[in-house]
Image (cartoon, rainbow, N blue to C red; front, side, top):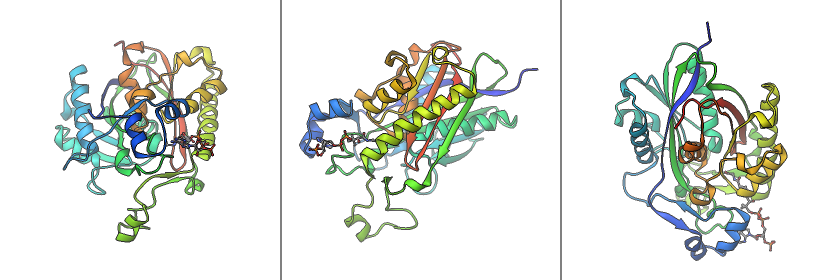
Length: 333
Ligand code: UT7
């Protein structure tokens, strides 16, 4: 008998309506459309306008509405909700419980996962493990962020990059060996705190007048170090995963990388010796919504995917966290 494993049976996504252009960023910091386009590859990004009571679960609610318009499922059959985010609505309760309650997933237990930009890949691995255990059959995986709330719009090292958006994937049990999540290679390195962080608001530096004055509630990064590690680790984890699964680059139909910088994406493709046409990219219009970028790519470019396609997802983010996941796409559009 074939083994039970997990397959993505539907994808939904949502980005805020407000389009923040490079021209607008250029009015905030000393930069230009030309520099951002050339050095980052972003033309515009979506940003949630600060409105009372609207945060990541608002985007998640819209994303699941979008999923329901494409895929029939009974919310009461969902047994677990995983929400990969660094920007939950509140420190507590978690975003997963809120979205499960609001969307009728009343029988699910829910928890948030903090793995920054690697969140979707890490959450898929955990979701598939729940299903492969045989105990659960339907798991809803949300991944997204509202990085605009953590962005210092006076810092040109970060504000052109970050954006808001949320995706959602329905994971279901299957015994069909031609589809589903096959394997993952995931890593963390906590020795990188100095290079990419937001130091305020946690247990070491709880919110205070001082933490606000010191801008501790914004993300800070050493862009060059992050850039180099992102290229090296995403390429290495993809190579490790391909080797482990006896795949060559020609067996792979799609690479879907985290969308942080077009030059990072191109460098990873070049190291893997994969033509850029095989790499899914939508960074120009949506920017870097952290955990949201990979599911938003799947959602945005879903018509390109065919049932059984070999797909490699790869991500890198704060922690550092990184890795790659191999799946066979589950359905035709
Ligand atoms: O998903 C979260 C993880 N984050 C990332 O993956 C981000 C990784 N890092 C990056 O994407 C890039 O390092 C940045 C986009 C942050 C910076 O790009 P860069 O090509 O690494 O720029 P740089 O820091 O090497 O600076 C090159 C030049 C400098 O000027 P000089 O010293 O050569 O005169 C900078 O001052 O570009 C200047 N510069 C800018 N100029 C216009 C840096 N940022 C900007 C800017 N606009 N926004």
